[in-house]
Image (tube, rainbow, N blue to C red; front, side):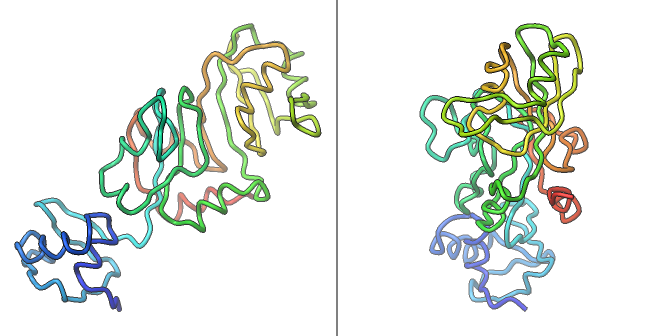
Length: 238
């Protein structure tokens, strides 16, 4: 049973300061089970709590776990410098509740990006010790050859890295398109590995993290969705 008052619940969901949330309640903007609740001290059970605010239905979530199909020219930063931040794609309340990208994609890289306000989840997903495979589709400037794939699988030496980095798997998808699976998550790793192997990455898209496939989420570029427990389970390495 929740011990949170209704104003604290709204605040926790990113609808503004506690004072502002109190005013929303007192102004009759919040309804639970079709009944307006104007007492901010009301303490509903948060388990499965659904409420209406501004005539829109919401469900209480202690934490949010989000998948975004990231478009190009958005930065994975809360303080972007040259392009809009990915948080501008999401509803405003996610910024209030401190939702952050889990890791980063370059501004020109598209595809699957996880976001959450759960610090432990963000840390766990970002840790290189977990060895979560990340799958990318890379468009190359020069044609994909057997020699290129062999180099990427065997390991290439990157500047400032103590040892060569190798792809977990790598396969040709088309004349200028390859799928590469990595576990390390180094800075600009796919682009740098292709450059070290004598090619150039002209476009990059992340298509999966662990067993979570972007195609299975059915998201157009710029669209997002909440992840449920089963989908989160796909992020755990086998």
